[in-house]
Length: 251
Image (cartoon, rainbow, N blue to C red):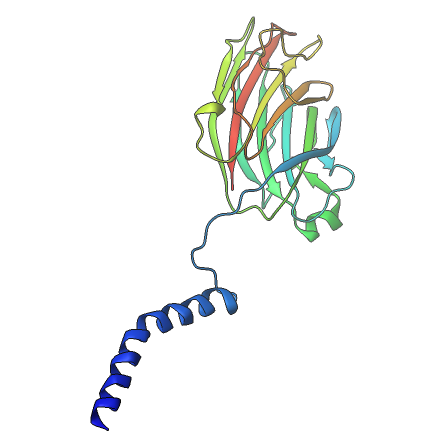
């Protein structure tokens, strides 16, 4: 009798590791508990854009058509004039680059972003100025994500204002370790002339959107895409030319 009890005890002890593993698997899989949390990759698709321009402008820009909660919206805003050209990122928006240039023709350039909420969509527009701007020009870009956005990290912010040809700017998106990278370039000017990137801008942007005094270009690198280093350049435009660029790492 004692021999049989001892044999059964040995068998139970031998099976304990396997039983523990079985229970662990059930706890992790059968009951829906994730073994290890990993940040999911998010992909982006450009959808729509909006623009606003004018003199003595109130600084209000409508959201791009089709905007929905969770969308990523990027704004490139330009203000110029000897009176009021003060623009700023609205409450809840994150400034990427804010630069003031005072060299005879006063100019402010602002890049900022926001992941839209239902309240933003209901409001339908955004105000970038506390009072009327002498000369105002804005571009807003809407990107739809494949999943909820966890983090957005701006990198490589570069800005220049010059009477003459700007120096080409380089954004090394290919050096980024992030799965998802969005590259942006902006050209703007005070005075007359076509607001365009020149032929040295390479590789070509995936898309560009222009208002009267500024133009935004973007390139999307989703998970699995081969990233490139971007050269962003423009020729002299008007009295003064502003060239800006940066990229966003997104998870």
